Image (cartoon, rainbow, N blue to C red; front, side, top):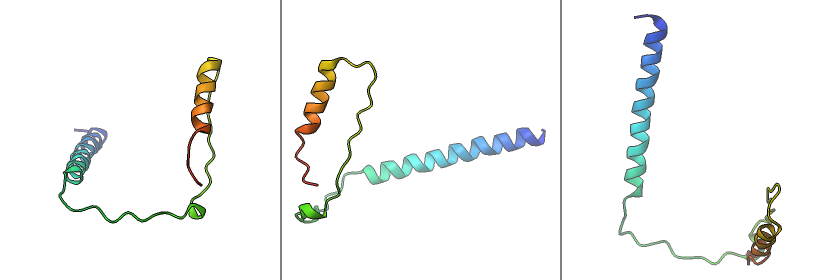
Length: 79
């Protein structure tokens, strides 16, 4: 077995192992717990950052773009 084949086999095996560990960790953390949620604290509107909205479009239907911009303008984010 050549060095390249050995390294490739090790790389694929490492990827498979890390992928299975990652999926297992996702499944573990996704399990439903019966722990109560932390108390909800109101956020001061002055502490929220401002938001820039970028709408990428090219040759879009003007009605679709108008609906998109109307939806963005109707947001109630206080930041």
